[in-house]
Length: 114
Length: 114
Image (cartoon, chains in turn blue, green):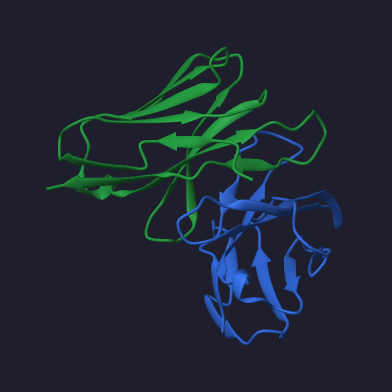
């Protein structure tokens, strides 16, 4: 079975621009979460979506938004990019609220803001 | 914010030796999970230990949990060069039915020398 997939792999943007990152969960997983990982730190929770509804939000500004589609794939949008938004953005899917609570991560999208 | 803190931040050992990493956290948890990350790529789930468990094994991995001290340890026995990676603990502190938000520590960088 295919794992969690993310696109694009790498992205370079300029300050003030907008970016959209995409994620496809493991087949059968209906919950998708987004994390931001700054170099040298652990991932930080941004959003969780389940059945197209936002179920949780981390401490991130309103410039960050996301949505989930009927096929359970998800997009993360970031507006008005800042240099500090440069990071690895990770998507994870899980069987929540059913089954175990392990999250399965994709390879990530490396965003560089210049 | 990071709830968990791993110790040590970096660990270098010879192949065949055991590696022990520790994690401390601040709030009550439902479970604690350990993840591995190679070279800034996606995280791989290693093991989950529930709050009512004290020890768990999976292959060469042994995890302990002491909820009274809010700490956990990950032991990798008979280490191999391929174990070289960053290791993160993540706590799941959500209430039942709430979003599964993992809070990650800052990680331990393990280097296994051949």
